[in-house]
Image (cartoon, rainbow, N blue to C red; front, side, top):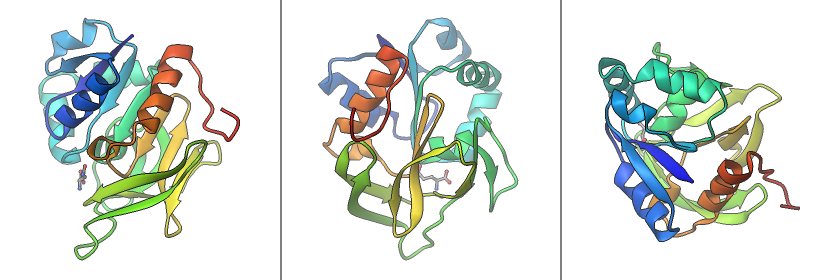
Length: 197
Ligand code: GLN
């Protein structure tokens, strides 16, 4: 199993460290040629969604990644990555992969609460640490989008088909369980985030 990590901008090294701890092979996706190297899952890291979207288009990587996501490549997206997957953004005119039918608000916690750490229950896993950095949250989602976690009534983690989108940064904490769940999804083609898994 090999994971491709979008590495044009943002916190991709932290995801690489997590995969190294788990002994999982990965490749950095930095240019179009990397997209045909073959990988079984994709990580879209946090960072700045506008910069990432722009660079992916300028590097001619955007359409290929969009097609890979649409053909059901498993995806783990954190923060800016979640913004890239959203069908709609409530406070930005830009749109990117639009592969999850949800509306996301960028920088949703305002200035004072821009960054914070908390713990909250995650569907099928239990209480996990969550680090938010100028984070988005999900304002609304279609009924077929599974909500995996909420903090203060705001949806912060969802799953749709083989895409997992998180408003927070599991790569900045030491809890590996979200990665383990994602890797099961990659390995088995399916994984249910429910109490019985
Ligand atoms: N605020 C960033 C954006 O809008 C996301 C922040 C992050 O990825 N930590 O893209």
